[in-house]
Image (cartoon, rainbow, N blue to C red; front, side, top):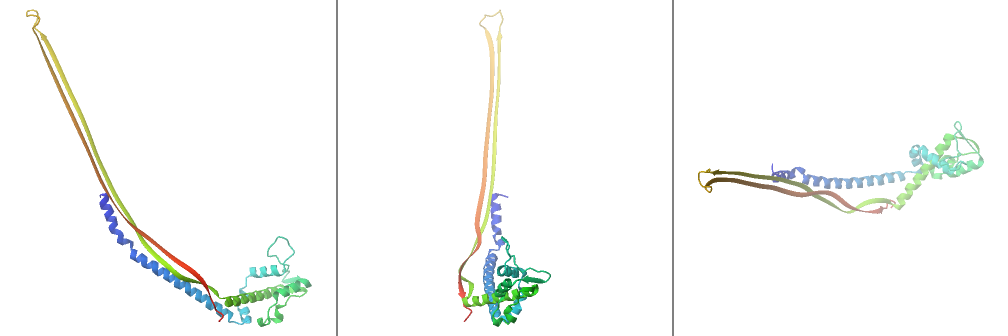
Length: 262
């Protein structure tokens, strides 16, 4: 198959790419992503409102069991750090067989950090630390309640300020098709021929002494044949076509705050 025929054959397969289907799916997927993003944001707003609409005591009961051990350890390390240099997340509250021994100063410092407001509905406002032996598990539970109060206060503050919302202001969807095919064929024929023949013959005769010395005979023959043949043939066949395909999405974003505490 010549280069031109091959290039044309490939170009006729352009419809197999399915460019309209590609463009349709690109647009559909973009809009589906935008809608899904907006739904997720709305769900987050609803969940936030549901959580902050609870009373503080209900919020503590619903969330205190989800407080991780790392969060509790970090709280104790900041509220009552151990006297150890260059170490992080080390607390003076140690588990000694299910108990923690605290002196008066340590108990006062821990109680100050654990204090909860009256609306939390916690007995003695979460003041559980005493001078002497303390239940280690009771301290952990008190810390979890205090962290839940902190989370509730943070969510309330978020509601007052409004939620950072991602909004699509404008966007461009661009599709472009690139399809490249190129064919080329080349043929060369060269023939050279050279022939040369040569023949030469010469004869001489004398009459002898009977005749005069000037009577002589001679013959000479020459033959030459030269043949030159040169053939040169060049065939070239070139063809090319190009189509561009490109798919991209350009979206400009802006953010704003959606007030929730209205």
